[in-house]
Length: 488
Image 1 (cartoon, rainbow, N blue to C red):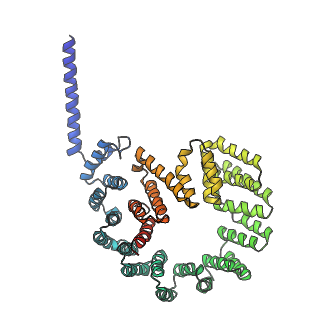
Image 2: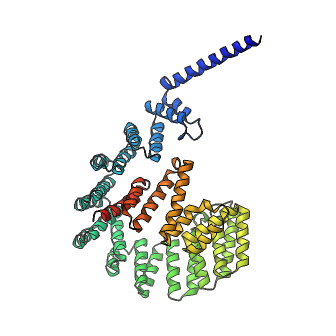
Image 3: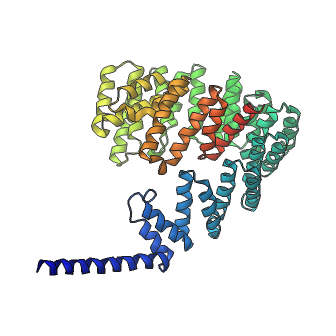
């Protein structure tokens, strides 16, 4: 009886195996791309699971659009450039993402230092985005150290979109001491009726030649809020306070603008009109609570302390917290809690600081409390010592290695910064988290490249910069600087 049952069990298993095997064969060779793609998504961590990748490839073979896009993204994260190019070329059949795939192929060839292929593909993208294509070809010639030709392509990009491309052009012209050409281009573009072009020129000269910047701004300041405010701020920097006042008045007549009120409040504080400064910083608060900005809140506290309006500031912040709660908005809670903490810190009210910190812990947990306060001290107030203190006091402070590394980087303690960044990188590789956090991973690579650049170790900088392909524009600017140092 037992042997009979065993035989029946074996037969059942064989039948199940045949059914499953037949299903697998059907999936691989006869199922449509959508079914194959759905099958790939049934696995946990589909980017890392072998079978999931297999089904993605099978779906891509059937020209499934999302599968192809997923594979390009996957191979980008793994730096498998051959497959990035292969699947991007396959994806070109998907006309809705044609521009993305052409750009990806061109950028990948650029990463591989295959300048001729990269140029060929950038030229294909000219029909899709001329300005970006011309600028990218210019970047390629910077890599080849052929700066005159790079300048030629940057000029072509600037002719199409001045505001977005002029800085790359002017940067190279400055680098090659070609000031006459900058002057010639400036004179030519000053004839433009495009307010963005004129504004960009004014912004370029505002720190180089403020008087000339003012002359440029005057062309469009009459009815342009941003330009009127820029003129006011330029006069403010020059300590020409009457003229600054005049243009702040003009800007606020053009539009009742929150940011302009904030700039005006800082101006009034500088010239000693404290009551009016606090009055205008209050006006800078947006009516939409979702638009609250942490930098504006910090500025508000600084002015409140400077003008002895801390009681009113405390009341305003508590009212904002109450409004957020009443409207069931959690978006800005941590920002306002930090601002309250910062207000008490500015007044050395340690007991009240402790109360706010405890509320932070109760609402979000100790880890979030330490990390949020550390982050805001770092990014908002620029008090890196207090930020570092918060991170080092936090439980599980190894989770903050990246934040600690960034603080040491800003403090120009490059060896300590490098130590913590390399630790983060090692941990990401160990956990393979770079496969789904590749933008963060490549951001860290780029920062490590910047550290080596600052240390004068240009070959090491080049090694990490070439890997850092996310946020492509930033990486390209860094590579340009490294190549110029390696081949002056």
